[in-house]
Image (tube, rainbow, N blue to C red; front, side, top):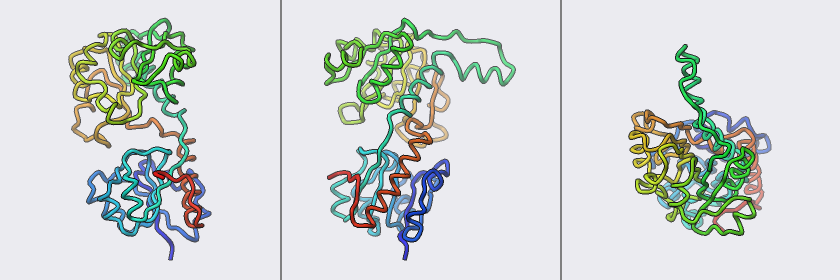
Amino acid sequence: MKLRCALLDDFQGVGTTVADWSPLADRVEVVALREHHADEAELLAALTDFDVVVTLRERVPFPASVFAGLPRLKLLVASGMRNSVIDYAAAEAHGVTVCGTASSSAPPLELTWALLLGLARGIVTENEALRANGPWQSTVGADLEGHRLGLLGLGRIGSRVAQVALAFGMDVTAWSQNLTRERTDEVGVRLAGSKEELLADSDFVSIHLKLSDRTRGLLGTPEIALMRPSAYLVNTSRADQDALLAALAEGRIAGAGVDVFDVEPLPADHPLRTAPRLLATPHLGYVSRANYERYYGQAVENITAYLDGSPVRLLGR
């Protein structure tokens, strides 16, 4: 009898086509689940008959209660090699092997600049006006050259964002709790004296910090209040969304670009859907063809290796 494999949250319906699943054809039945199951009871009901689950990034939590509720589950494949919403101890206790895949930093880097440039040049506003025969030029773009980009985080993605900013002729500063001058010198940017200094002195602020208890809610009302009224906040995955909504509504910052939300998919009546001065995308940071080919292609490899008794890319060990 074939094992059954579920591909979670295959919103675009591409999970079975961007990779070659034929090596598993005789051993595994692959089923794409296109609807998101935010409720744990619904998730358990959807996955009860599956032996293998492929999940994207940290979209679906796998706490101990989920592993306990899925006695048939034997292999969990997560895209990326780090996942904070999987209870690895519970997985081991229930005999579930957890594997990861490679993930490129290029797609989130590129989306960061799509958001930043879209905000700076009023791309959405001007495009909508043009298509609706509205006003011919209604915005005045913000310049990048000669202006300051403040980066909260200078890791794998943040450092690449910095390089693009330098190519645009921007002045770049960076800050994080453990960032050193040696690291900023290596990247070619300036170390900000504090988070508060960076926020107060930047024309654009972009956030590139891993989610943890230390970074959760990194920017609340007091921090956003430090920003200039002409400044833009980009990729606010670590910001207090209520504080951001208030700042946008009151015009205390020029605009914000958001790709990650507290609740996903975003509810139909969520105020972020209609917030002014907001350019928002539905968590597309890692969503690109090359990354999906990598995720699902390595998922095939992971499942094959597991079935052959030699699992690879193990997580939580």
